[in-house]
Structure formats: C-alpha cells, structure tokens
Image 1 (cartoon, one colour):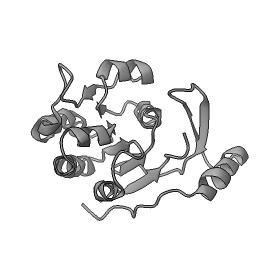
Image 2: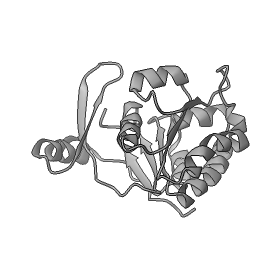
Image 3: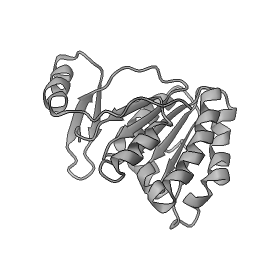
Length: 204
C-alpha cells in the first residue's frame, strides 16, 4: 500500500461557506442524507471521484453517507458486501440495502464475525465480491467500533490484505469511521491504507 492521502480536517470556512454555496449554486453534485436522530435532510456537495479500485476513508457520524454511496454504486448490478459493527438486519432495513449481503463484525452478535478473527474469516466474506470481477463494492461501516473490539494493528493487518484483493480486482472500498472516537494518530495510521480521505464530520 502507499502512504495514502494526507490527513486534512475540513475547516470552518469550507464547511460553513464554500460547501453550502457550492450546493446552492449547483456547482458540484450533492449528496442528501437524513439525520439519524433529527430526521432532518442534510445536503452537501461531493466531489466527483474516480471510484473503481479506489479505497476511501470517510469520517462521518451518520452511517447513511456510506450506505447512500453503496446503493448508488450497486444500482447497475455491481456485487457488494457491507461489514458493519451494528446488527446486520437493522442496517439492511434502515438503509434499504436488502439485496446486499450485510455481515456483522462484533463480539456480541450470534452470527457475527468476531473482530479478532477478521483475518481469515473476514477475508473469506469479501472473497466472493472480488472473485466476480465486476467492479464490486465493499463498505466497512463503523470501522472505529471494530477497532475498539479488537485492535488497530489487527484491523490494519486485515485491511492490507483485503484492500490488496480489492485493488487487484477493481473493487471500490469505502470505510466509515465516526468522528472523535479514534485519536488523530489512529486516523492517520488507518488513512495510510486508503487512497482518499473525506472528512464529512462537520456536515451532519
């Protein structure tokens, strides 16, 4: 893996002036998500990025950002899988991904993958997506929670292998972490395993 994109936290001016202006003027495509607690709709501009075979680390408090991206990328029949720290069935219903396999990674769920066994059990879970060779999608939702139940070193070891498999087969990887859970240093270490870093924490 390369060194990844440099870690840059989005600033006040960008969050409060540039982004709303770009969204209002239609200068960039916009992503609209529903606030998880408030139910309010939030719209933010997103940069059109080349996505096939890229790995994105997204800092966002609202899981709907990752799931909206997953739904958009799978509309054309791309194979996909979601690995999440939350209950699989709840995420499937809440975010409308009924046709996407959702695997819980937690030490608490009955059918969940133990976070300490991501390598090799987690790798076997994403193997099907990489084998289909159709520019698939892997979403790791709540990666910070998975780190807290195992260790950052174990998760990075898993990501190196999983991301290498994804890259070779043109699979897009999206990993969402909640803001303020991991230290800046841990975020920097995770970021080294990804091509792009998107801080959307101030958007919702």
